Image (cartoon, rainbow, N blue to C red; front, side, top):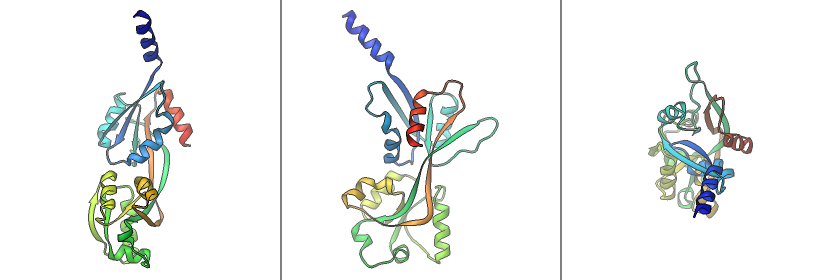
Length: 214
């Protein structure tokens, strides 16, 4: 019995914990991809908490989190010197079911005629989308404005409209053919960040993730 307890204590002592905060609207596929090098390791435990970016940054500042994953880089100031590591930059595409995409329609025709599922105006990519509509003199038919990537994915799968979204969000559906990628938006992308604070003794697991994503 003592031997079993000793082995359990050693195993527990050898496990390292990484506490991750994830912006609630962030793509689940992206999160898994970023954490992939640590997933399934016997010596690592990952604790993931999702929430609003402001709440997560407060937890990071209070040392309750080691890193926050977000698609917005928080502004730095003397009081809270955030360090935003750019870990990925994804293109943004027009994506929909085969029935919605059809055949023979151009990119601009689809944007003009089909209902669209858009990210909300506070999204990092919405400014570029609206600017494109203005340049092309398009008045979009907006089926839904959504701040959650998982919900955009579901609405696209249901055929509610064509979604404007990074392909990584619907990676599985694209591979299976349930959804099709019409085209990428020119000069438009979504940037993902790992936000940390300068600390004297940072979690060493972060170095492994930063190295693998660079």
